[in-house]
Amino acid sequence: MSQRNKSVAEEQVTSVLEAGEVPIYDRPLTADEEVLAALGYKPEFKREFSLWTTFCVSFAVLGTTGWSNWLVQITGAPSVDYGMASMMLATASIRDPSYVPQDYQVFLLTVFIMIIQSFVSSMPTKWIANFNSVGSTLNIIILVVVIIIIPAATTREDQGLPKFTPSSVVWGNFYAGTDFPNGLALLMSFVAVIWTMSGVGGLMGWFLQLVVAYTVVDIEAALDSDLGQPYAAYLLQILPQNITVAILALTIVCAFSMGQGCMVAASRVTFAYSRDECFGPLSTITKRVNRHTRTPVNAVWFNTIVGILMAFLILGGPLAAGALFSIGAVAAFVAFTIPIFIRVFLVGNRFRPGPWNLGRASMPIGAAACAFVVLMVPILMLPTATGSDLDAAGMNWTCLVYGGPMTFIFIWWMVDARKWFKGPKVNIEHQMFGRPGTTLEGTAAEIDKSSTDSSTNDKKEVDVDKE
Image (cartoon, rainbow, N blue to C red; front, top):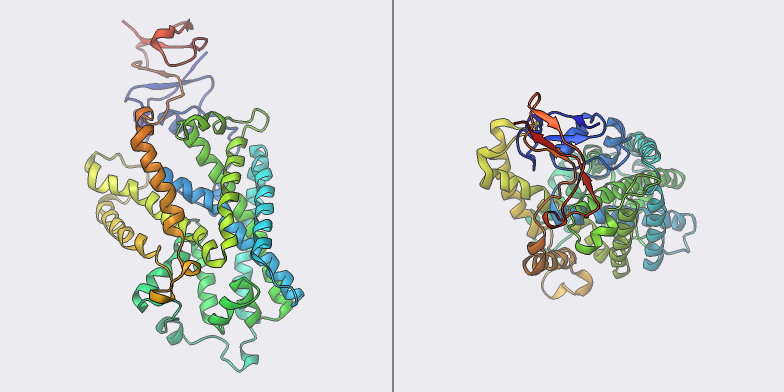
């Protein structure tokens, strides 16, 4: 017996179904499943994420639209895990000063971490939800603890320095980390903020950056340290060794949880794109839901393979590996701004707002956001050196690593994909014209082979308009 749900016209989403069309499913749908149905999709995962556990995944990463968004997602885990691997090896170097981490060791450890996270992300939904819940709770607690410990335990005064760097220096001085003018260099530094703010933990991350700014002793020494991890080198400048190791251990725990959350989010994005057959023939594999775990296991491991390939940038040194972070920032900017641009400049008042919106302020804020992104995207691809000082080792590889795939995708679209990709694939049965009190139930019938793209063996229940 089919369950009759409310019309998609009652949902606060722009639906692919017409007003008055009602999704049909074999059980009552929850509120979020009704929105999913309004978008044309049937529930396929075992939905065991609570509001808190959903927050815990989004604590790691948030994202929106298109291929650019997919690049954001698949670089999330490799970038976090690269930082984590660097911290683990830096900790070993602190314990044994004769050991100097090598790029290939960072690469291998990053790959190993990604494989472990892939196994975790392939577990049943309930297990993933519990894992992310515990991990994100620890993240919040550890971040607060670290923000308190660093100022409290700093050894700056033992080095003949004030306990904190004066505010006039923190806010008034520029560190000459590039060959560009100070104003442009300031905008280039936004890459860390943009990458951090891709998760809802960005505010806490900003507080941590303030703590660093007020306590760091020598920026140049931290960046050039043999530890290969500026954060570890910074901690060693201002804290006793044991406390430094303890904070790094806590940070590593946070990083693992964060990377695993990125892995889960990326697998859902890949599955959603595969469901709409965005990956062409590959979609047949990546859109499958594992019948035992009810999770997109194939999508998880596809992302892992792509992430490992991107992690080869680590072998090119810190600047090349930095492209993992810059790609996330640039791709997120583009992905977030495309729907804003369409809403502000193309759709206008025809846009159907959701339950939370900016009201009259949405248009000017949207226009300002688009202008800011147009300014920032080229800046985030600039190298730190100019002129004769610029060589292959100092190049900002973001323009190639992001621009290359996006150029390929554009060419693929123009040559082939536009011929067969027509938008979201509606996969939920729905009542076409029925309204309460005006419909009768039809019977299951064989679908004629000549009139449908579906398998000839499919059965479909249809509601017909009552005469």
